[in-house]
Length: 451
Image (cartoon, rainbow, N blue to C red; front, side, top):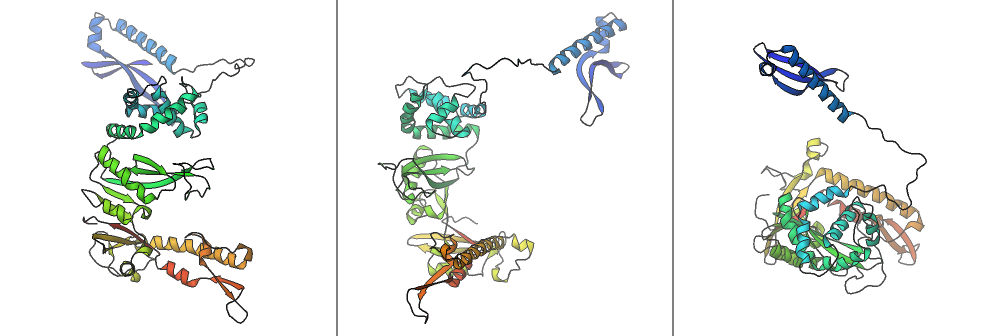
């Protein structure tokens, strides 16, 4: 570092500057510290310029030594003959520190203190809960494995494994309270957008072959033959979880909505919102439930399950529009090779009446989505042809995406009469029927606002 005097002759400043080399290899200077005005410094040394400069250079030398001490390299000596003592941990997990900060912002410690006043236990409920959160994020596994993982954290647990099993009953009992408090506290971390709520269900299995009052045999998402439990989850408009609940595995997903939504309305002060879900949860009962108060709904609608007249109107290529335009378009006349048209989404509104409910089905058509569906189906047809050509591969289609659904089987004799001989061929009627829906998508809503 060196001393630099800048400014005009009557008003000069004294700086300590540092030279350094930039990433491109060129040298540059940077002000490290300002010592003061030249006139004021000379007054301190009775006008002796040489004495003032000697002092300034000594300050620059001190700053250079301090800077080098901080920026210099450190050498660590390791012994090749030394061994780490057996069972002694020298490597620790620190990824949880980021989650720990979030738990603090959500005031999880305050929530645990409120819970502790209602229960009598000697273990640290807050420590166990936060450790379970950390392990669930970073290394999801069983309770035993999660405890082993937590012992590798920089701050290992001071509780025992059996305390984890004991705390589970408290967590289950206080689950609603924890969710409610977390929702309130989360508004201080990130304002919650609760005008639109999304709901969906899933299920997960247990490694047991015996069901009970809660774990029941049902349709598993993973097609496993184990007892399952159903979980329903609400999320806000930003995709942040709002509330959840669990139900017996054999319970119809349609019936899981009302209890959880009622709890949200009661405990979370969310009375006015737009409910969104897929078609599997869009029963008439659920739609009617979200037609009262300030609630509305937007739910995926299956075109195939619409009434014949309404479906015919929805698939009619006329009276479609582009977003922001009132001009009607006949989509059958579109040049879908045009890049602009290929990327455009067209829509139409179809009023429908279901009992005493006036609803609107919004049908969209996308040339890009149509091309995607056609490409997928062509691949499935190719696989179906291979199954016909290889007798050992023929089987009955089990779901809507199985290529075997395009195979038609007929039992005939050599004269064409019905008998025991089996003939397999492509079901062209089935293919043509599916082609009608290419590019179309629909939702049903009771919103009266402009779309």
